[in-house]
Length: 213
Image (cartoon, rainbow, N blue to C red; front, top):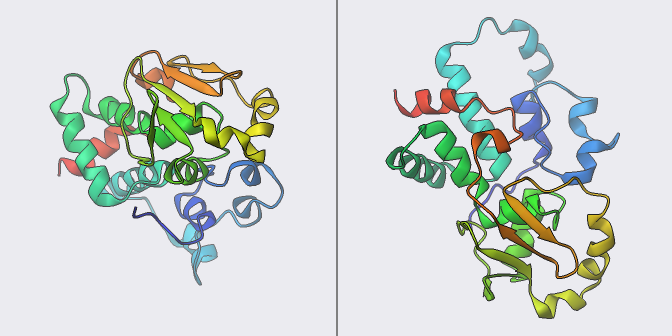
């Protein structure tokens, strides 16, 4: 399972905004973006002042990279998702974000079972979740309407999941396209996510323009 293995705080600094890649740490004073809100590197502090008006290509590239980094997807897979979004009826950009939101690791994160998408990807990879009663360790699995994602019976004995029920009470409510059952530590997909359900500052049109060059 390929993924970015470097310091993720640099990714937020590179994109110029918080991407919330480290869960609760991003909300604490330890957040690197709060302390150094400029691009990483030797000349990062000066680059934000020297740079002039960004070109169209630069803005398109940065928007694509930001989306990739938020969802933890590498380029080859992201491009495959884009081709799938083109084949679906409707707006390509909205379809792309809907596919990304439907990944199993993102659904686990949206249900509040993990503090970040990276944490969710780790939990799924270790086999702690089932989809429709079947154990799976594939974070990129696309779930659809009526699918049920639940913590595996054997994993509920672990301390993390025993504490999770009370922790869910302090986490934000789940999106409208999901339903959470805190007693069973499970969640169901009510429908496909729409663009209005996705609370991310991503300009999906710029991503479409990038791949349409």
